[in-house]
Every structure is written in structure tokens, then in C-alpha cells.
Image 1 (cartoon, helix red, strand yellow):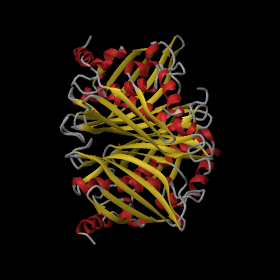
Image 2: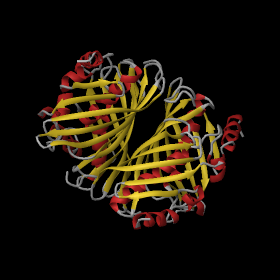
Image 3: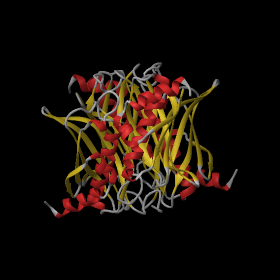
Image 4: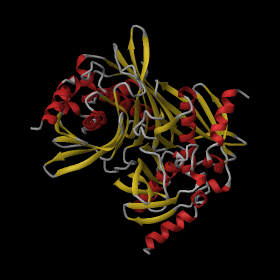
Length: 142
Length: 142
Length: 142
Length: 142
């Protein structure tokens, strides 16, 4: 395992909310991040699909890791937008984020979220957002 | 308690992910929805603030309830965008969503998310999105 | 007329694209900006409504002025999102933008766009975005 | 020239605002659309770069054409989000949009906007949005 991936996993392990959701970081290198979340009952909504809030969490977090892969670990998601494409059903979610453009203090990233089952991967949501180095965003105090 | 609020609470109670997060529906009437989430350790990220994914979940869900208050219970969030304004710290989150415009099959809604402590409420994030009646969105199969 | 409004109007007058569209700045004070655009044939699309691109221009520009009212004149729009609510028809457009939250280098703003005719104002689009001081955004070179 | 491209060009030619901006449709086939706009002085802002409103117009229109390539000509952009990445300078803009996911009544599309000069193409903005068949969106009356 790369040093970079180990570093990323230690950051993820320090997020209690990610531990609650069972998230794993499966790729973390310059310009790329990938998270996986096992689909279990407590992540669902009332129709039996994965709750949209789980998908938006996955987008938020994968975008932050992608941005952090080029800006360093002290980053936050300043904003993002997500379009839901299909209900998410299956064994696990994969969120794959890439850096589209990076400056010194901010990076614009995209993230595709797939539901995985025995038949393969299906795109369920797609997101785009801005990652900011701490102290550079709309809230310099944080 | 109004019938409408009871109906909304029964929908929320049927969402396992909302039960996991301890979400309560505290307002649900035509054009308005309000959710509250107690801030507990397992909702945090590595800096001790509420995880951005919790805020995006709160936005997603409050937007859906606001849309559902005018479109009926069979709705999903088609898309939304969120800007994070300040780190969220305190005793609880309040997500207040309103309908900006509603048509027959879709509603555009906004949501403000506050962190609450003894000093009062502080705006932490703001979101805007589209709620769609089931069968009318980009994925008529869901 | 206030000094602040005069300053804002001189910035607007220096934008050739705004001159092409006939845009006027009718309010510019801390936290608020208002633009007006006369609806003329060359701003329309194929169905006879104002082109969505005119509405997105109005949102972009009003958001920038609102952000500039608190951050100073050296600002750009880093990103925004717009929802179209109704076709825009009438005599003129009004774009009203407000600052939702401002830090030292960035401001998050919202903008509502109305079409005006003899009957009054009708909300046609709503937008939300981030304004950044020059040199602080994703592209420090600009 | 393909029949499809001719059809698309006739739609574009019926948009007075696109004629004002000198927009050309250079690709239009299932899932793809490309617009080109010559950069001339009247499209600039006060710093000498292409006005952000021109980029947002290009995104809006390219997204609509991409959506229309799979949904048919009676479509509108329901919403989109754009991130500005670099100031746009050069001889022309190219907006390339693709369909990410299409249902019966809506399509989610992405658009990259490049500034072109003798050195080549530079990515200046990236957008993501929803295209809706007329009569299916938030405003069934339009």
C-alpha cells in the first residue's frame, strides 16, 4: 500500500461519521480519490434504496479527498452540487472523484457515485464542487 | 400536533438512515419543513466539527420534505447544491427548508442549516435544489 | 445618488458585454445589488422568451456585485447554480442579489430574478453562488 | 453535414440572443453538442476577459443542445451549476456538452468550456445541469 493511501486512510479513520457509515478509502493519489461504502439496512430510506443523504455524504467526502490529494490534508469542501440519476441498490457504493482544475488554494473536482452488485456498476449520482485549503474559504476562522 | 406533521413523522420514521442520525421532524406544513438533529460525537469529522456529509444529508432531507409538503409523499430530491459557510458546532442542527416555486411535478426549494447552542443559532450552510414527484424525474423507473 | 452606487455603475459601464445587453445597476449598497435589463427582441430564444443565457448572465453579474459590495471591487464569481422557474416574458428583468455570508476573501450570495410587466413582478429564476476576491480563488493567476 | 446538425443549427438560428453573440453549433449528435463563439470586444468584462455571463450562456445553451440530442427539440434547461476555473482569453470559446444520464423526460448533462488561441485549448469553466422536456419541469405551463 502506498504511503499516500495510508495517510488518507488515517484521516478517514479520524472521522467518526465515516466510521459510523463503514466508509473505506480505496484509492488516494494525486488528483484521484475513491471511497467504498457497504450497503447495509441502516443506510436506506423508506423505499428500500440507499438514502440520498448517504450519496451526498459520499460525494462530499470523496470530493474533499480528491482536493486534498493536491492541496494537502488541511482542506474542506466549500460547496458542491449533486444530481441523483438512479435509485442506489446493491452491495456497495463506490464514489470516484477527480480533480478538474487546481490552483494554489482551491480545487474544482467531480465525483461519480456507483452502486455495485453482481451485475457490475451502475452510475447513481454525479457531483461537482470546490475544495478549499483551511483559512482560504468563506470562513477563514475554521 | 397537526395531522400533516404526524404524516411527515411517519415517513421520517420509515427511513433507517434518519433513525441512525437521530433526526426529528419538527415542522411540516404546506411550503415548509424543519428537521432537527442532536449533535453527538459520531456525527463529527476529524477536526471535531459536524461532518459536511451530515449537513448535506440534512439539506437533502429537509428539501425533500419541503417539496413533499406541496407535491405529496411520493417525491425524491432530483438535485441540490450546498454552500458551507461556517464549521458546525453546538448542541443540535436545525435545517429549515421552504418551497420557492412549485409546479405540478417539481418544486424548487431552499434550505438553511443552523447550529444551535446556548448562545443561539448560527447559519452554517445553505442549499437549493429540485424535488420531483416519483416517476417524473430523470429516472422514471424509480 | 449614493457614491457607492456611482462607483458600481462605473464598474458596470466598463463591461462591454453589459453595455451590449443594456444592463443598469439600480441598487448597490453593503450586502445588496440590483440589476435591470430591458427585454428586447435580441435577448430572446426560439420560443419568444428571454434566453436562459440572459438570466444566467444577470445572476452571475448581480451575484458579483453583491459580493463586491462587501469584498471590494476586485472580485469574480467563482461558481454559481441557477434554477429556472418560469419562462421570462415582459418589459424588463430585475435581478436582486443579497449576501448570505461573507468572510475575508469570499462571500456566498443569492439572487432572485424577476420578469416585470404591467401586472407586476414574477419570479423566473433563483441562483446561489460564491464570490471570491481576485487572487484568492481556484485560479490565483487571474 | 448531417441532418441532425442541420436541424440543430436551424434551432440555434431561431435564437436571436445566440445570433447576437455569434454562436455556431459545430457538433450535434446523440449525447453530444458543441458550440463555438468568436471572442470579440463586446463579449468582455472590465478586466479584458470574456464576461462570466458569456460562459454561463455557453454552458446553458450547450447543455440544452446536448439534452435535446436525446430528448428531442422541445427542451429547456431546468437548472445548472458552473465553476469558473480560469479567465477566458483568446480567439474563440468552445463549449462541449455530453449527456451523463437520460431518462424519458429529463437528462443530466455536463459541459466543459475552453478558450482557444494559437497555443491550443484551455479549460475555463465546467458545468453540470438538468435538461427537461417542455411540460415536464417545475413550470408545466411553459
